[in-house]
Amino acid sequence: MASVTRAVFGELPSGGGTVEKFQLQSDLLRVHIISWGCTITALEVKDRQGRASDVVLGFAELEGYLQKQPYFGAVIGRVANRIAKGTFKVDGKEYHLAINKEPNSLHGGVRGFDKVLWTPRVLSNGVQFSRVSPDGEEGYPGELKVWVTYTLDGGELVVNYRAQASQATPVNLTNHSYFNLAGQGSPNIYDHEVTIEADTYLPVDETLIPIGEVALVQGTAFDLRKPVELGKHLQDFQLNGFDHNFCLKGSKEKHFCARVHHAASGRVLDVYTTQPGVQFYTGNFLDGTLKGKNGAVYPKHSGFCLETQNWPDAVNQPHFPPVLLRPGEEYDHTTWFKFSVA
Image (tube, rainbow, N blue to C red; front, side):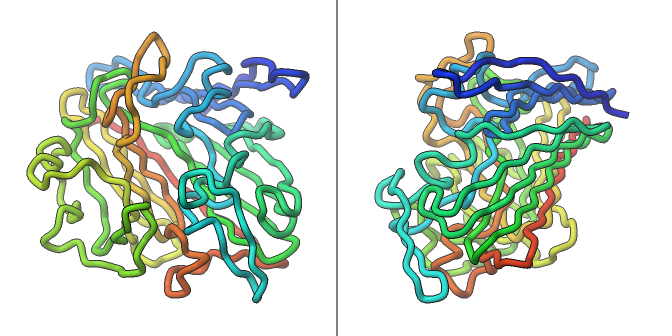
């Protein structure tokens, strides 16, 4: 069983409201989530000796999350990842979004779901956050009602996303936690072994927009179907890092997505999802300038993300899985983060 406690995390400037923190605790995990951006601020996992470490990057104080920072732990919406040139058409009408990552729109725009205060409701084993994204917010059509629910079951953190729209709009929600299974503040993730259950991936252009091809991983640096040690793999293929969508089995049922094993501590993270893709990102844009928890700095490759999602720019690529949510339909996706020791 999990217990849930709530506390004040901080006050938003100029009377913007109170940000609360919810602690979800089981015998195996302790997770802290705040109502600002539905953000996971800490996630403590035991190693094979039974010692707990916080394995997500982030900040101890609210101020950290209000500064310019790379979406640590936050829920991303309305549309995760990139939309080419910030434009798309729905039913013949063109929409224009803010260009917040030249020349594209990234992670919902200037003030995405990560930069708003959500309304919390405590559950017996977790917390549910909700909000209404008004028609036209960040340029997106229609009103969108959204619910994000975090529940804890033993060593498993479950994240469910639901949404309903008043008119057709693209929706693609994810969580942007940066993990380091050696413990946050460890200098890199090179000693992590990574497996991703994907036969294909999406090659991208220089602005990280998919070029439209669904490419086989076979014989490439993107073949992660068997475990690879990340540092050695990046070196062998002379890669700067990963920031790519891996195409998962097309099932809407729960399916295995990825596994990361940190041999030194014994910690294992298994990810399952109902989504058709996962963005594997190795913290290539981290540069050591942000001061995190316990005085940690976060240099390049000091954390990894497994952002379960629809494919990037799907709203502009008709052969990608459909991303439009229409009135009367419900968006409903779940991702399971399962921690264990090996």
